[in-house]
Image (cartoon, rainbow, N blue to C red; front, top):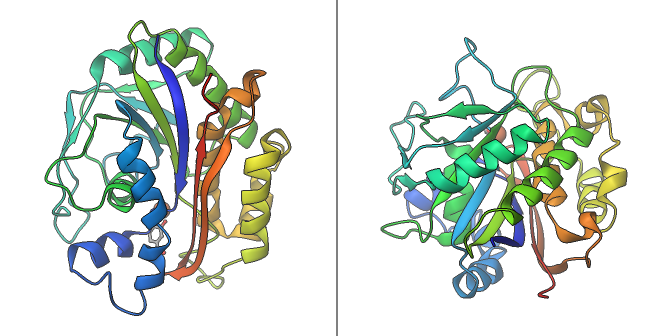
Length: 286
Ligand code: DHB
Ligand code: FE
């Protein structure tokens, strides 16, 4: 059977992708940020999974305001890198895993979570920047990726509780897939940031650090946090953090198993307009 071996969390700031693509990683502004990912990149080289289920948000790139699915799973054999206005990033296209995606869709929908099935999806910085941060600049991504898009752009986004419960359902789905796959689940976006209006540039490190603490130790409590609190405390785009709860919900401790190990934790302010948070949680091996 397939199993979930780890969950990985990271912000997805587009300027990080540009810094990588333009060879700026050693500049004083960027060096501390990329240094913070080095331990995870080394860990990832030794723990490359067979498949990544990557929870991210599309930024009106693939989905326009004409159609906004709350939860959407990529079913395709491959995904092109989107043109976000400056041309597509010079990174590899993403190879999918249609068979596992179809199984997860069937299982999760039968567990009463309505997913939109997406057969064509161009992926923006929400997906490519996390891949670049953890894998660097390879000629091909080292494993297939199933994109799992969440609406956090247009009100109303899903609640933290629903996201955590969805993660639990995804765990059950993966564990009922009849092939010995090592699957990681990634939660991306966040941390505190606001890109619009009078509070543009808002960063709340106290909120972010408490969020990381609770994500590790008390995700059930975190799931009760209402939207308005993200908005007030973490800024209008801080709501991206609910996606981290989907990945956290898929870990064993929320199904009665042992707590995961914190493999790496990193926090850095700022990158562009955003506080960058990063966490790797590894499952205890049975
Ligand atoms: C920035 C952050 C985001 O999450 C995003 O989607 C776009 C821009 C920023 O900090 O610039
Ligand atoms: Fe974003």
